[in-house]
Image (cartoon, rainbow, N blue to C red; front, top):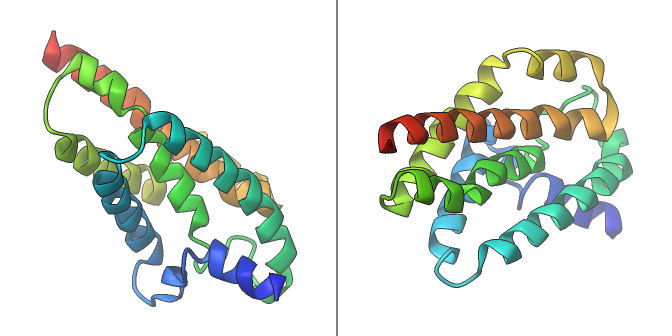
Length: 161
């Protein structure tokens, strides 16, 4: 029973089972959920939820790792959810640098996160190739999210200045 729940969780409600671009689809769902729920919940709630998802993801991935043959299965997309949440959590910072619609921040975060996650510039590629297990699966996407935060802060600082 717990293995079924963990599979449901790490595939982000089975969206990881989609044949074409499951990571992109999971990132898109995350942005859409964030966009609609941002009027209901505070950024603090999103931060706490992201932390809980991250820590439970480590446990869940370790629990179901025997179900997959590769070291970073494309069906596991909860790492994209956590990675995508990082630039979304920084929206209050972006708003101070360059006030605009929240939809703009969501779109920019989504596009840049997917670029960094797909092309994996250093050290994302190093993490992806050298850190194994649940932590390795999660860390490359977290690093991609951090890259997006840095780039968007840099861009919005100069656009808003």
